Length: 408
Image 1 (cartoon, one colour):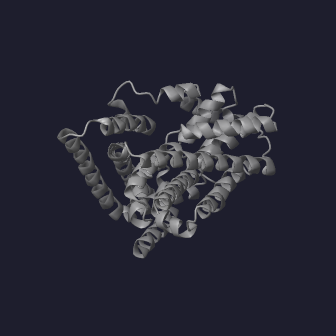
Image 2 (cartoon, helix red, strand yellow):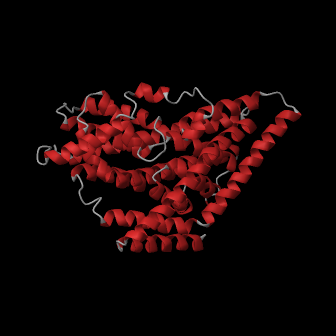
Image 3 (cartoon, one colour):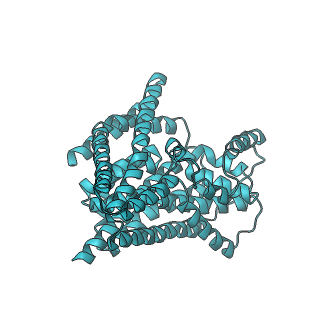
């Protein structure tokens, strides 16, 4: 285990140094390798989500234990997500970001607005449209699009359906076939993780090249301080306190889940990171497979701590710059909007950005502000995704501890 952590850390350093060189062909090669690894993890993420939920529900659907796992997962998800949004709101009040001067560089503002308007064209115009997009009208399309929320819905229906089937040889064959596919999938995941140091070099070089090029230099000051500060407080203080309250060692848990958190940082997708998260939870953190394979796919879809904070802080920031009054009741209202919006968000790169853009478009906010945020969102997205996966890991660990305690 220590050897793997050392190897991954060395790959991170090597990649960062390669990215700083600024060699065009090397940057292109690193981008190419990073894209390959992103695609492979996304490829495995879809069947991982579906098979994990189906096999768990099919095997435990009639047992009271499954209901306890589900209730605890939802409870901890709501508590941690609400805490993340509340931290963001309190920091926003304390730091108080000022208004931006959009007239200083009209050409830049026009370019940013045009870029965001092109993104908004493909974004649902309301949150109800976002909810409707979850309801499938074609059983093949969700798999082709990798729509995690729709896949979870289908997996729930299929898993519960199998659990309610009369006990028969056909049912046994069906369940064993699905479990066999799941074991094959986990073997492929282990192979991919074995080669992951190569991917880490590429991801680190890609990030280092972006930072060197000045992607994060042009920050928005206090707004960025609120976002990053909120992520840091939730990551290093709030979530460890949740673990301590359940009698779990935060340092030990983080050490076990660090491969997944590191992978999330680079892929910017909690869904693509799911295979590593499940492997780390079971093999390194000792979580029961029946808990990890049920809780983590659900958390990947609905447990979005970083997204909740981003939606709330960014919405307040855009509304403030659009001339809308930001009162305490308004903040509290948007606190709940942010929490429930984050729960419905997809665990994919830029998912929070598109959802916030949809909300701001719906209330007539100045989307030029979203255009100014866009160039630095890459870094924000990385931090949020790492926080989301860490939160998923905490919810999984707490749920597993609760079940073990109730059985003693």
